[in-house]
Length: 223
Image (cartoon, rainbow, N blue to C red; front, side):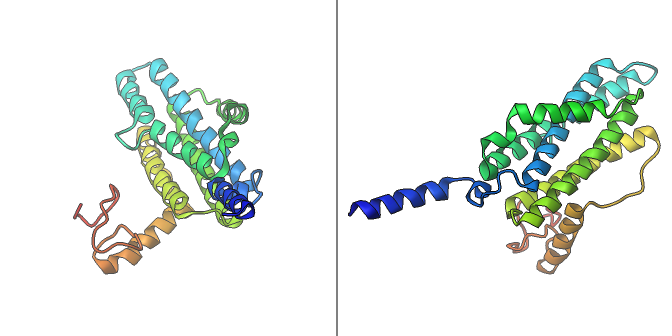
């Protein structure tokens, strides 16, 4: 094989291995910043919830102690650690390792934590979750606008919005001030998929659904 052909193949291999956004020259695009802010929100929640788990006091101490343990530890496959890890891995895959560097994320975390100074820990947590919901929607819209919203990122953000909505419910019940329900755009998209999938006998919404999909979020009851 000639040297020019070998050189061309080597170049194509490098291009195909490069993260999607780097190939498009958009490493500093708005969608990257939005994803970095979302990552910072999730990591800030993890840190604040664990610290609050130690520090809660008062008549409902033990209940709040366990509540915040659930909020930071989560359930299998849906913990904040799982969500942080899943988002970070996707950011590295599509946009490069520099996008998750601590020199970028930690100042964002500090800004988020500093902007929520409520003395009452449940109310503070509730407001931080609301801000995280907004960050999910911002990331979703930014990815859509730049054309980088892959199926994997789309599904991840919709599932994340759904899981964080459960946390808002728990905190709202503890406050006894449940907020008026407002779907984020990822959640509305997920609902549309479920409706589209219902014609196949499954509510999971997958376009490849043939009556079941095996997803933990699948509502068809066949998994």
